Length: 158
Image 1 (cartoon, helix red, strand yellow):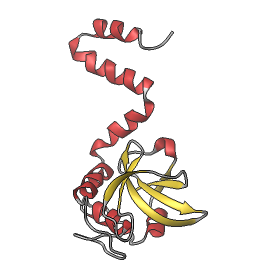
Image 2 (cartoon, rainbow, N blue to C red):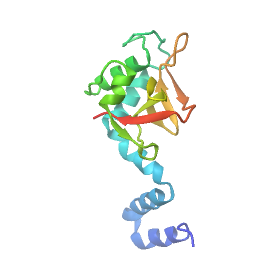
Image 3 (cartoon, rainbow, N blue to C red):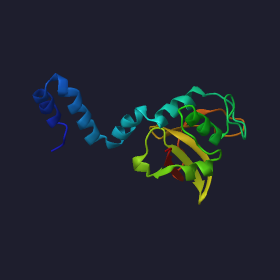
Image 4 (cartoon, rainbow, N blue to C red):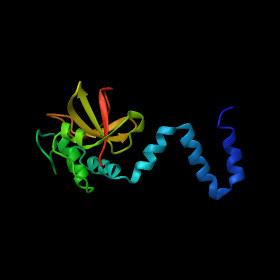
Protein backbone atom coordinates (compact mmCIF):
# COMPACT_ATOMS: atom_id res chain seq x y z
CA UNK A 1 0.00 0.00 0.00
CA UNK A 2 1.43 3.40 -0.92
CA UNK A 3 1.78 6.32 1.49
CA UNK A 4 -0.50 8.52 -0.62
CA UNK A 5 -3.90 7.07 0.47
CA UNK A 6 -2.96 7.61 4.14
CA UNK A 7 -2.24 11.34 3.74
CA UNK A 8 -5.93 12.52 3.64
CA UNK A 9 -6.64 10.50 6.79
CA UNK A 10 -3.64 12.06 8.52
CA UNK A 11 -4.75 15.55 7.56
CA UNK A 12 -8.37 15.05 8.64
CA UNK A 13 -7.25 13.73 12.04
CA UNK A 14 -4.50 16.30 12.51
CA UNK A 15 -6.60 19.43 12.01
CA UNK A 16 -5.77 22.58 10.10
CA UNK A 17 -2.83 23.68 12.26
CA UNK A 18 -1.06 20.36 11.73
CA UNK A 19 -1.98 19.88 8.07
CA UNK A 20 1.14 21.63 6.84
CA UNK A 21 3.33 19.59 9.16
CA UNK A 22 1.73 16.36 7.94
CA UNK A 23 2.18 17.41 4.31
CA UNK A 24 5.82 18.29 4.92
CA UNK A 25 6.50 14.94 6.56
CA UNK A 26 4.72 13.11 3.75
CA UNK A 27 6.69 15.05 1.13
CA UNK A 28 9.98 14.27 2.86
CA UNK A 29 9.09 10.55 2.80
CA UNK A 30 8.06 10.62 -0.86
CA UNK A 31 10.75 13.07 -2.05
CA UNK A 32 13.69 12.77 0.36
CA UNK A 33 16.10 14.93 -1.69
CA UNK A 34 13.76 17.89 -1.48
CA UNK A 35 13.88 18.05 2.31
CA UNK A 36 17.63 18.68 2.38
CA UNK A 37 17.33 21.45 -0.18
CA UNK A 38 14.46 23.08 1.73
CA UNK A 39 16.31 22.94 5.06
CA UNK A 40 19.31 24.66 3.49
CA UNK A 41 17.29 27.71 2.38
CA UNK A 42 18.71 29.95 5.11
CA UNK A 43 22.25 28.56 5.20
CA UNK A 44 25.27 30.67 4.25
CA UNK A 45 25.49 28.54 1.11
CA UNK A 46 21.92 29.36 0.10
CA UNK A 47 22.67 33.04 0.64
CA UNK A 48 25.83 32.68 -1.47
CA UNK A 49 23.67 31.23 -4.27
CA UNK A 50 21.63 34.45 -4.25
CA UNK A 51 24.82 36.52 -4.46
CA UNK A 52 26.04 34.45 -7.41
CA UNK A 53 22.64 34.75 -9.10
CA UNK A 54 22.82 38.53 -8.72
CA UNK A 55 25.97 38.42 -10.90
CA UNK A 56 24.15 36.76 -13.81
CA UNK A 57 25.51 38.13 -17.08
CA UNK A 58 28.83 39.31 -15.63
CA UNK A 59 31.63 38.49 -18.07
CA UNK A 60 34.23 35.81 -17.45
CA UNK A 61 37.80 37.00 -17.03
CA UNK A 62 40.63 34.68 -15.99
CA UNK A 63 41.87 35.61 -12.51
CA UNK A 64 39.00 38.03 -11.83
CA UNK A 65 37.35 38.07 -8.39
CA UNK A 66 34.60 40.64 -8.95
CA UNK A 67 32.63 42.67 -8.46
CA UNK A 68 31.92 42.93 -12.20
CA UNK A 69 34.05 40.17 -13.79
CA UNK A 70 34.81 36.67 -12.54
CA UNK A 71 36.55 33.42 -13.18
CA UNK A 72 34.97 30.30 -11.69
CA UNK A 73 36.71 30.31 -8.31
CA UNK A 74 36.56 34.10 -8.18
CA UNK A 75 32.75 33.90 -8.32
CA UNK A 76 32.57 31.30 -5.54
CA UNK A 77 35.04 33.21 -3.38
CA UNK A 78 33.19 36.51 -3.93
CA UNK A 79 29.77 34.97 -3.22
CA UNK A 80 30.82 33.38 0.05
CA UNK A 81 32.79 36.44 1.17
CA UNK A 82 29.56 38.48 0.88
CA UNK A 83 27.91 36.14 3.41
CA UNK A 84 30.85 36.15 5.82
CA UNK A 85 32.68 32.97 4.77
CA UNK A 86 36.28 32.80 3.60
CA UNK A 87 37.48 30.61 0.77
CA UNK A 88 40.93 30.23 -0.77
CA UNK A 89 41.46 31.68 -4.23
CA UNK A 90 41.61 28.70 -6.63
CA UNK A 91 39.24 25.76 -7.20
CA UNK A 92 41.60 23.01 -6.00
CA UNK A 93 42.34 24.90 -2.77
CA UNK A 94 38.63 25.55 -2.30
CA UNK A 95 37.99 21.82 -2.60
CA UNK A 96 40.61 21.14 0.09
CA UNK A 97 39.02 23.76 2.37
CA UNK A 98 35.50 22.30 2.26
CA UNK A 99 33.83 19.41 4.05
CA UNK A 100 33.31 16.83 1.33
CA UNK A 101 29.76 15.52 0.93
CA UNK A 102 28.22 12.74 -1.16
CA UNK A 103 25.99 13.55 -4.11
CA UNK A 104 22.98 12.27 -2.18
CA UNK A 105 23.75 14.67 0.68
CA UNK A 106 24.37 17.79 -1.41
CA UNK A 107 22.46 20.94 -0.52
CA UNK A 108 21.81 24.27 -2.13
CA UNK A 109 24.97 26.32 -1.66
CA UNK A 110 27.43 23.44 -1.71
CA UNK A 111 30.33 23.86 -4.07
CA UNK A 112 30.46 21.59 -7.11
CA UNK A 113 33.98 20.68 -8.19
CA UNK A 114 34.58 19.38 -11.70
CA UNK A 115 37.54 17.05 -11.93
CA UNK A 116 39.59 14.87 -14.22
CA UNK A 117 41.12 12.16 -12.08
CA UNK A 118 42.44 14.00 -9.04
CA UNK A 119 42.76 17.34 -10.88
CA UNK A 120 40.05 19.89 -9.98
CA UNK A 121 39.59 22.21 -12.96
CA UNK A 122 36.30 24.07 -12.36
CA UNK A 123 33.92 25.06 -9.56
CA UNK A 124 30.35 26.33 -9.28
CA UNK A 125 27.71 26.77 -6.56
CA UNK A 126 24.92 24.20 -6.38
CA UNK A 127 21.55 25.88 -6.96
CA UNK A 128 19.35 22.78 -6.59
CA UNK A 129 17.65 20.73 -9.28
CA UNK A 130 20.97 19.55 -10.70
CA UNK A 131 22.04 23.10 -11.64
CA UNK A 132 24.92 25.40 -10.70
CA UNK A 133 25.74 29.07 -10.85
CA UNK A 134 29.18 29.49 -12.40
CA UNK A 135 31.50 31.54 -14.55
CA UNK A 136 31.97 29.09 -17.45
CA UNK A 137 34.97 30.38 -19.38
CA UNK A 138 36.41 32.83 -21.87
CA UNK A 139 33.79 34.60 -23.95
CA UNK A 140 30.96 33.47 -21.66
CA UNK A 141 29.03 35.07 -18.81
CA UNK A 142 27.99 34.04 -15.31
CA UNK A 143 24.95 31.82 -15.67
CA UNK A 144 22.80 29.04 -14.25
CA UNK A 145 23.46 25.76 -15.99
CA UNK A 146 22.70 22.06 -15.64
CA UNK A 147 25.60 19.96 -14.32
CA UNK A 148 26.82 18.29 -17.51
CA UNK A 149 28.98 15.45 -16.17
CA UNK A 150 29.16 12.92 -13.37
CA UNK A 151 32.82 13.79 -12.78
CA UNK A 152 32.03 16.12 -9.91
CA UNK A 153 32.69 16.24 -6.20
CA UNK A 154 30.72 18.25 -3.67
CA UNK A 155 32.06 20.34 -0.82
CA UNK A 156 30.29 22.28 1.94
CA UNK A 157 31.82 25.55 3.05
CA UNK A 158 32.52 25.45 6.81
